[in-house]
Amino acid sequence: MKEKKTINKTLKGFTKNSKLDKYADKVLFKDKVKMANHILKTVGLPKA
Image 1 (cartoon, rainbow, N blue to C red):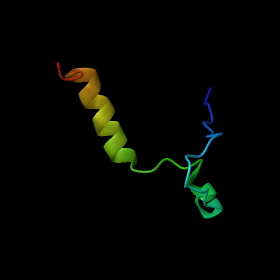
Image 2: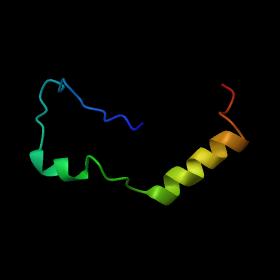
Image 3: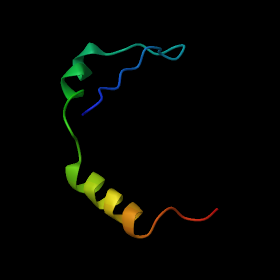
Image 4: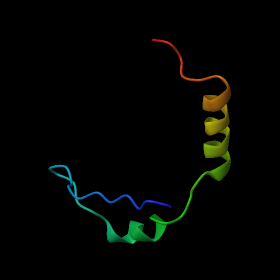
C-alpha cells in the first residue's frame, strides 16, 4: 500500500506553490533512486 505524504505545516516565511502539486504523485529521478537503494542494500550506511 502506497502512503501519500502531506505536509501540514509550512515554515515561517515560506508559502506553498500550488503549481508544484502536479508533481506530488510522480516519481522523479527513478534511476538515481533505484541506484541509491541498491547501494544501501549492498554496502549499507557509512559508519560515523
